[in-house]
Amino acid sequence: MKLLVLGGTRFLGRQIVEAALARGDDVTLFTRGRLPVPWMGDPRVTALVGDRDPRVAPGLSALERGQWDAVIDCSGYVPRVVEASVRLLAARVARYVFVSSMSVYAKTDRPNLDETTAVATLADPHTEAVLEHYGALKAACEAVVDRLLGARATQVRPGLIVGPFDGTDRFGYWVARFMHPQLLGDRPARAVVPGPRERPVQFIDARDLAQWMVDLAARDVEGTFNACSAAWQFRMGDLVDALVAAAPAPPRPTWIEDEELVARGVAPWVGLPLWLPPTEPDSAGFMTMDCSRAQRAGLVIRPLADTLRDTAAWLRERDNTGAWKQVLTADAERAILA
Ligand SMILES: NC(=O)c1ccc[n+]([C@@H]2O[C@H](COP(=O)([O-])OP(=O)(O)OC[C@H]3O[C@@H](n4cnc5c(N)ncnc54)[C@H](OP(=O)(O)O)[C@@H]3O)[C@@H](O)[C@H]2O)c1
Image (tube, rainbow, N blue to C red; front, side, top):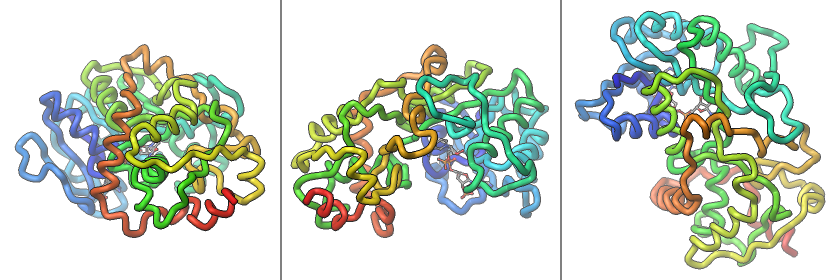
């Protein structure tokens, strides 16, 4: 297959390129060239430079020529910008796979929400404020792709994406806390973990997501898919047990209930990643989304131990300067344990 990736050099896109190369595909990347291209000199990879935003020179001019079997759009956040690439490429790509998000839903206040759930809408359809309106903007981007391409559109809505090259410190916090605690400074021998053990958590290794999306593109599969581990496949207890099993000298997990963490002012999701107390609006369904459609379309979730091992190896190698700014501090953790 000839695959065009809009993006491709940071995290998910990088794994998409690797998955495509492993299948023997030819890959074209389109980025601003700010991040290095890891496959420089590889004859199977063509790296084009421009800007997705046609208002920012040189815009999309590098994409004015060429034909591809599929495009995977990893870097679309604003409908106006996505529309520019869809219009430019419509006659020259067979399938357009748009990387959306599970954040598109208007409400995630109950478990098992599937792809038919209502999506968020924008009060101001012209807003481009991505941080404030991330989910509704992704939904509006999906609508553009659907409107212009119909059955040639594929919408993929991932949950939390994890694994090597994830620079967000979310899942990585748990891996570091148990497998390389020294990366987080001088930490106590016990680790605060958010109880109860049965708390459902949902995430997907970028490599599983990437391989499946490349496969969807190659098989020319249309539709809209939530894309994550299955609802209730993993509980917080499974994650903590797997971390303890994988770590050479793990801290002792100390389960702390929601009320205590809330009272201590721990920031949900950010201070303790994967932790969403019931006090958070719309949290009841966020970690139990129905992903069965993706599974029926071939999505396979690798063993958790693989993700932990490879994330730990990557964390050890990367430059950790400037990391872990938002997670629970060592002092706050000690105070909770006391
Ligand atoms: N992380 C999660 O948990 C999560 C969850 C759900 C959905 N998602 C979605 O998953 C996608 C994955 O993002 P990723 O960052 O991992 O993808 P990526 O493709 O690995 O990285 C983003 C790429 O876009 C390029 N880029 C950024 N702005 C650009 C512009 N204006 N014009 C041209 N290229 C541009 C960057 O290169 P340059 O900087 O060199 O231009 C980089 O190659 C996003 O759409 C995100 O919304 C993520």
